[in-house]
Length: 499
Image (cartoon, rainbow, N blue to C red):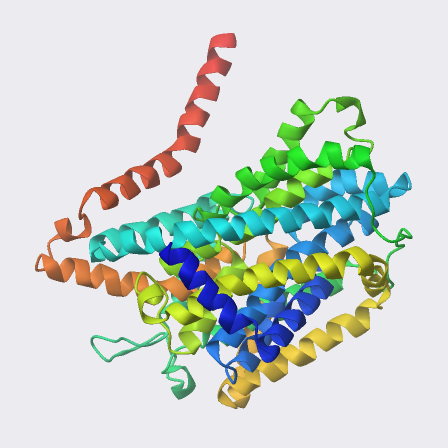
C-alpha cells in the first residue's frame, strides 16, 4: 500500500500544467526521432542533456522518459512503412510489419503495434512500482565487495551479449574505462592520462562523451550510408483493427510483455533478445503459421510488446542500483549525476518525490503516446520524407551547441569531433557503443568500490569477495565467459567423433 500511496503522490506532482506540457513534448519528440531512421532515443537524450541542466531534475527526467518511450513507439512506424528499423529492437517488427504494409494492411500493423506498446508499457510500469522499492531495500544491505561484484557482472553482460564478438565488446568497454579515468586521481591527487592539458584535469564530461559517440558518431555513420533522398514510404490511413485482428493480437501482447520486462532489467539484456524470442514463440503458437513471412499480425504484436516492456524493465536497475542496462538509461544516469544526484539504493530514500513523479509520468506519457500514435500515424510517416543532408546537418549543429554549452570552452568542440570520429570508427569495425558509455559512467564507481573493498582487509585480495551475493555474481561471470569455450569444445568433439 505504501507504493500505491507514493504513486498517487507522484501523480499529484506530474498532473501540473507545466509537467504535463513537458511530458507531451517528450513523447512527441521521442516519437518523431523514433520514426526517423538512425535517430534513436539514445541520440536524442544525449543531444538534449545539456539543455536539461537548467531544468528541475523532475522535469528533466519526465522529458527523458517521454523520449525513451516515444522512441520505442516511433521505431515501429519506420519498420512497418519503410522496412528500415530506427532502432535495433525494431528489426523483428520489420519482418512481418513491412509484409503487412505491402499487402495493404499497414493500418492494422500500426494499430496493433501502438496498442501493444501501450499495454506492455503500462504493465511494465506497474512492475516498476512493485519491484523497484524491493530491489532498493535489498541493495541497501550490500557492502562494497558485493556492489563491486554486481558492477563487474554488468561489465561482463555488456561485453558478452552485445556486438559481433566478445573481444569487440571488451575492447569497447576498455576504451570507456580509459576515458572514465582521465583526470585527477581522487585519492593521490595525481593527473592521469591528461597529456599535460589543463582542460582534461577535471576529466572528460559525460555529456561531451555521450553527444560525441551517439549524436556525432551516429550522424556521420548514417549520413555516409543512407541515400541522400528519402525512401519510398507506403501510404497509410488512420490505424484501426477488426475483430479478427483483436483476437489474434491480445495473447501476443501479454506474452511479449512477460518476455520483455525481465530481460530489460538484466545487465545488457536489452530488447533484441526478447523481441526475437517473442517472434519465435508466436510463430510456434499461432493458428496461422503459414502467414509468417507473408505478414502475420502476431509477428508484429508480440515483438512490439516485448520491446516496450523491456524499456520499462531497464528503469528498475537504473533507479534502484544505479546500473544502466541500455544506452538511453546510461545517459539518463549521467543526467542524474549532472544534477548532483547519486543514483543507487538510497535514491528512493533521498529523492522519493522525484522518483515517484518519474514513475507516474510513465503512465501519463504512455497514455499520451497511444492518443498521439493512433490518429497521427500518417503525419509521422511524412517525417520520413525529410532530405538526409538537412537532417544530419541539423543534428551536428545541435550536438556542437550542446557540447559547447557544458563548459563554454572551444576545446570541448575539438574533443567532440575526436569522440565523433571514434564513434564512427567503432561502428565501422563493429564495436558496440553501449559498453563504452557504461565504462565511462561506471568506471570511477568500480574503482572506488574496489579500493573500499581492499581497504576493509588492509589490501588483502580476499576483500574483493564479500557475502553470498558476490559469490553468485562471480559464478555467473565465470559461466558467461566459459560457456562459449564449452560449446566450442563440444562441437570439436562431435566433429572428431563423426570423422
